[in-house]
Image 1 (tube, rainbow, N blue to C red):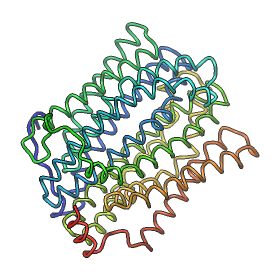
Image 2: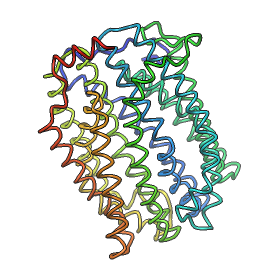
Image 3: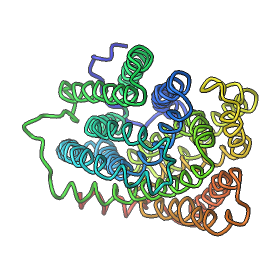
Image 4: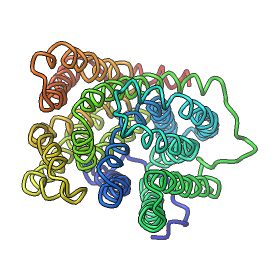
Length: 459
């Protein structure tokens, strides 16, 4: 398939559900794997050619990056829900308003994020108890990364538009190009020009610029109803209010959970560069399990949004069940591979035995619980697609932030160890999925036919 060829959106309101979910999810899954691949290459290159301190610097930055960009990515999620509903309802005029409003928001947000990220980076890294032999490299890497925030947000918002109308293939192609760009630049700048973590940061920003340019080109050239026209690029206040009403709860959830992860990272940092590097290496492996699950979450959001827009309640329920089966099958398969080869995979990042030891401890603890996240991601995506953003937010924040912080601050001090810190993840995943299932079973989260008709009349 030619990535430059215009592609019509895909309506998921008719046809075989599991086939549609797979057709939509597989390009997303592959895209997430490619994205994680180039993030992993960053760590491998610095771990092998610079040292464990550089690996620790790149690794400790991930949770902070997610914290700062989480709100903006949540707004992108909100825009995707609105666009999928308008697309399912075949409302071309409001679809246009939504597309131009969300892209204008991404430009404003990306510009603001450059300034915010550069200013607050040193203070937050110090608050995270980043060791002195790592902090300078961490500051350099993060500041370079945040200089590419505009590219990051434009790509994510633009790709969200394409996914909301059922096109998950072109975002995959663009991520593939971006990943290859990043890998080549990593090797050239770090291995060839010996630029260390600064080279990794520059490679990341350049690759994000490539993906942003490609997604903008696709939206500007399409002849479909979701076409982007620069002269129409402005914020419609009513549409912004709708997008933010859905996006802010999702963004708050991502940001607050990321804040808890920053605090977890701070507790890992106490054990020194080897623990930081081992945990960072593990996090890259962890991404090959958890990031692809976001594809099933996005599929659930788009599928639910389109079918609610079309008034098909029963199809939403069937989609949830079939998507959980798909997600759990993937998770169990990858978990089995990690169980067999986890320690050898960690050895790709570094030759330091202490770093590998810390990473393997994390794998052993977390591995049996990945399947809980498979269920959670599908249910969270479905709740978002149904417009139940506040419920999804409260479940996530209550367990993955508040409960996690209670555990870290009140229980870990009695059993101080690296392993005790890591246990915060499986414990809070179990409580999260339990609440997800309770909400799904006992709350009428899918709008009734009357509610759908009323909502449609107000749009």
